[in-house]
Image 1 (cartoon, rainbow, N blue to C red):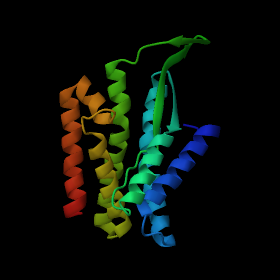
Image 2: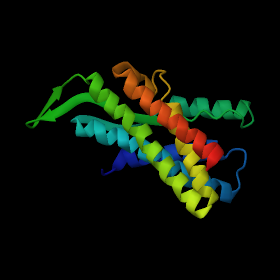
Image 3: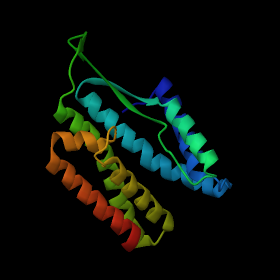
Image 4: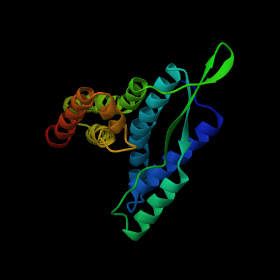
Length: 196
């Protein structure tokens, strides 16, 4: 799962944007470092999971910035004095083309493939949240609890059945798959927030 060139730059800019928005207005070095670490462990694996499964199905897929989303984020952050955090710097864009026998062909992304690709990101966040919660219960290290909460929230939010979120694509393909993932993410969110 190699990341190269433009995609490295896009991920770096997204991480800088997310760290700034997440940290604002507490722009002290320790809080910024903690925010960067949490975002790196939460956001990047989520997006790489989408990209991995899209490519596994043979599609061309890359993480791309969404400059308009970043501008909205900065405007909302500024006018709300840091109270509204719009965190949408980019996403994995999937091109419905594939390489077959040395030729580039156009194809349709099936609802099943789209559902699997979409579910992969929240499933990664669920796994990170579970592992972080269990490690927190063993060690009491508060950063692990924060990591568990952020990943549980990220999974839960992305599973909302609203376009263009991941949950809408899973919901449209199979309601029961969506429901099971949503319930699991909700339980983990509640556990990481109130128990762990």
